[in-house]
Length: 237
View 1 (cartoon, rainbow, N blue to C red):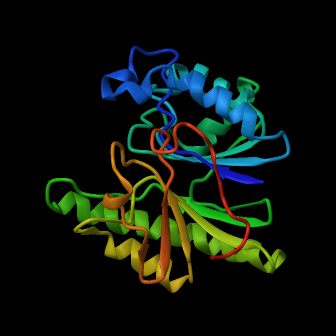
View 2: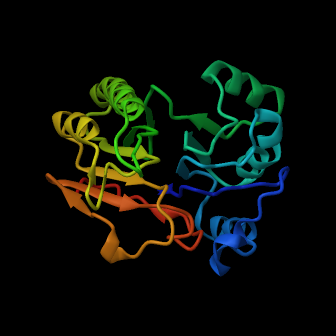
């Protein structure tokens, strides 16, 4: 089975208490561990689209990544806005090998096939205080990375023609008045119908956009899910 959960915000090696953001974050790492073990089996796959660790480098993120590695199942992780530890894919993969991390793969300018699903994605981007020139560059860069991932996904789809296609991002592509048109254009052109994302905290169902231009969006932030990995439906919606 395929699951998703974003925004684990682990901090075993740094002082970053999350309960300052509300009671639901108290002992959230233990809640995540217990719920994960109850839900995920060794043969399953879990996608974590960003904000995995508060570590500012790989050494600080080591214990957080080892925590994820020891949990059941295979894991595919993407980059979030707080994943400052994220380096080049080559350096991260070398770090994994050096530290015996064997169950984690990266979702970064590539695609994966697992649980009869082609898994694509990128970080994405959104602006909170009006679009600046810097934002425009990042929107275009992230859209290009999404297209690169989806092109890799097309190759996997040829090998597995009956597979589903799912996209996993850290940032929402649509939220209220914000619409990432560059990203929406790529998703629409490649026929994406389902996107799972994180980043948003302390939001209600009424505040999130669940569909746009026939694309269904699913919020998978850890606190929104109660730190319970969410099942990704195997069928196309």
